[in-house]
Length: 90
Image 1 (cartoon, helix red, strand yellow):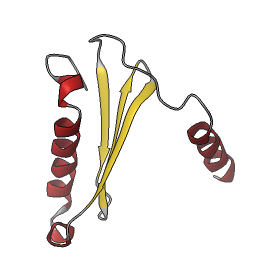
Image 2 (cartoon, one colour):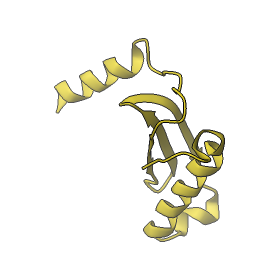
Image 3 (cartoon, one colour):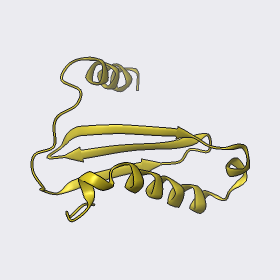
Image 4 (cartoon, helix red, strand yellow):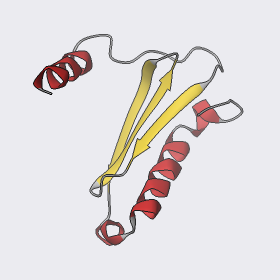
């Protein structure tokens, strides 16, 4: 577990972390809502294009899990709509 954490830390703190999107080929969007905020990653060809996060408002912290997960999806789609509009994405 410690080795995996160190590998992840090294990957996130060494260049190049982000890559420019290439055309309109398929994007992959990963989202999560762990209860304190939304976290999202936009990827293309296995490389990270962008990260995004947002803290939950006080009233949102009481939402059920499925509502928070949907909120994270909507958050990601709003932020990256210019990348994703008219393209295939997962």
